Length: 157
Length: 81
Image (tube, rainbow over all chains, first blue to last red; front, side, top):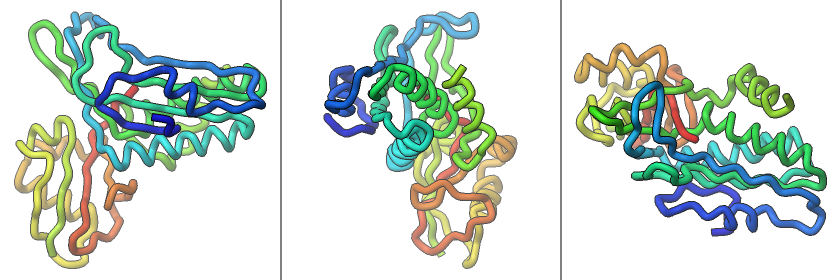
């Protein structure tokens, strides 16, 4: 799986995102893994099930890669997101950002995860002791420039 | 004309299906498809301020025109990552 973006129901492989951004001019590669945590808002989480609108989710990931390249032209970015049932400690998202120097790689990686939470049509069904609930975060609007600027601000903080 | 409606997460549960085929008036917009859906599933009405929509797997607006055979998706607030 060397594609820079992917939606998959298989276990994520951090080496796959690293290999997807490999290049001889890179002096840095950052990796980020989002993990399933055993608690949320005071509840004991047992597992999560992720659902995606796959064709649009993939396009949204491609869009995030294109946006990051606009902001940091030297960066290569890869994002793989998992779907289906995930147990505590498993990775739901894997991001790799490579660039000539570390600052851009760190920034692009943070930008990517913030934008994922804003515009990628994926939903988390949280199962906890005593019930289950759909986590509802941001109203997805890729053209919302304020949201994009906010993600960029966090990335450069 | 016929459209395919795709629903996700809580909206899918409210409808009891992730995919529906419905007959809507010609020259309908996404908003008209949504109103059609809400007549069938009134519990969905409260979602209107917080949802996004897509036509043929591209983000769209509620004023976007819909054609025969299109796939119209309604997306509750997202929570990936």
